[in-house]
Figure 1 (cartoon, chains in turn yellow, cyan):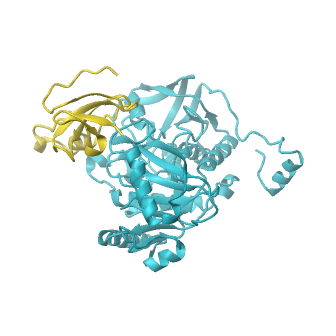
Figure 2 (cartoon, rainbow over the protein chains, first blue to last red):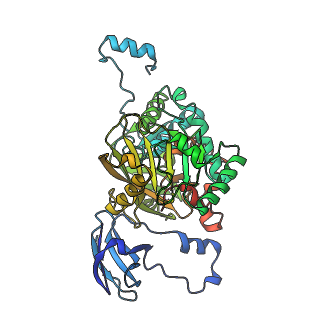
Length: 93
Length: 414
């Protein structure tokens, strides 16, 4: 079980949270201009790294707000958590 | 190859079993091969075996970074079934089932395939509608599928608690479903492939691809450069890393999936019982251990260990459904890394790099498909065009939208 620091509520058990995959996947500005192939790339294709991963979590059983986590996917060590819109912290894996 | 039989067993018994041959060689890699398969698990070894036996593929090698069957082949819960909803899935899983049914004789190796029957329990009106739809679809695809009443479930599993927190309202039964010995599948395919001249090279990790004119020409490994005319990549859990080495991305994310086994007890459960909605998924091995499949963690990880909360969520319903198991001790617990696609169906496909083929994304349920997956992948690599059964599982489906949505049939909550 991970212990996650919600940027609004502080340290809580992972069971209060839900993970929602890779962060910083920007929604295309003009979706109507995308080909099916480009749209598929945006919706389904992910980097799935073995190492440092920037990911989105939501504090489902808490404040219900979204935030980002930087975690090592091999050790599950959490380097940092930060609010949406904040600068992506530089982490060297 | 020394043929295994009752006579060879008797002959070797006389010499106190000191005379058995090694089951496969341990050759050094050659400079080049016609086909190199990356990944020495069940799917990879099966691919190599069918390439050598049916496809006239020339010189074939299998590269394995650890030891044979040490990845997800050795970490699954050994369940075999073919009761999937969509025609495409029925095609590949039933193809595998037909190969399973004669596999031990085919390989001259006892894979302990046991068609002991497999039950999917339904605990709600929604579950009943789901098994109704899926059971009928399976039946129309010519695959055995029966509906059971709670009374019939009790006849098969006399100690089940039907009137539990989420009462058992019915079940879907595939009598041809069951289990196989997972290690034996890897070893049987390895021995048979080796006998046909396939070089199986263990402790050989792939570190890069040689790609010229967008065509793969070789593989960089920890044992040097190995030339290859064609490459098939069959690595459960780590396919995104290999795709990155080849310069493209996959529609896959990797998660730990856990399983646990109890102390061995006398025969008590002679079928497989799965319950997707409360997540209790159980069978008994021939050694007597109860084999329990847990869920996958909700976040990407390559840690090969999962969260304890997942175990609790699994063991709770198991005890509720089978109070008789409540005092059993759990002996071992582990996790494998499963590569999950968004539609819970695998990818068997060409890739953006010519002559480089991928077979991955089997998610939480690849073991059952081992023979079928290897068979169609071998034919696809050899011909350079996808086998008709493999065609729908192309990586292009994520860009065209022709997904094969098996979320409901995966039996494991994701």
